[in-house]
Length: 310
Image 1 (tube, rainbow, N blue to C red):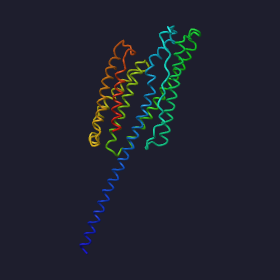
Image 2: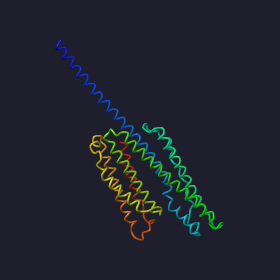
Image 3: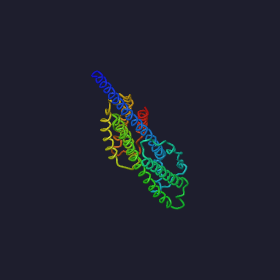
Image 4: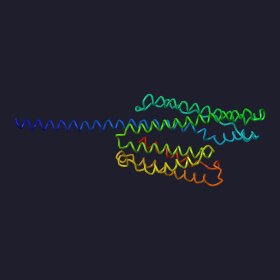
């Protein structure tokens, strides 16, 4: 009887141990699902980010010319139409509604994001249409008929559309970043969470610094804002470069993570060169070539995509 009780005790311990192992496996499995769902969300939000960037391509390509048309009206300058061209139409933008909603985004969050993107696209369309209308007014020398009267109205309307477009862009980007942070928080039990959160924020911050610099180049902001944002990114990216090293190594993602930061720091050097050039006394910001920092962002964004898609 005593021997039987001992055997029962052993079997009971084995059963408990088996249950414990199963519980651990279940917990690990649930954590893996959380990570997978969060990564799915990161991928989706990165595609939305691509749409936001795509919507600005026309602006960057034509901003200098738009400013010239505005200047012609403000200065009531008569120009040779042969040396000008009407601004091109905007290329058809990708339909972000076709992207599948990630699991961890609530219907409310998804609805807010779609509404923000729809408004941003509408603002971009209104802004570009008004800019094109102004360009036709100048190129076709209509100002000679009304002494720039309609031109002043067009410039006022264009400035309103630009402000709406900018404000909505800021609101949409802030919403996107909030959802990216939420995605990282959703897998907070995972040691990979801090790294995902850090790298996503730093990539977004680099884009923000670029915007501030380019705005200054086109005389639409103060350089101090760009310098402050640059210094914050430099400090954060230096610290974040070593976040979650052990977890990244175990997951086989460290090399790809490191690559993002190699590109970020190359991009920061390109930014520093441009900021230093912009600080030169008497330097005309419009003479600065912003192409190096735009190319740097492409390299950073490509490295980030490789990381989150791995």
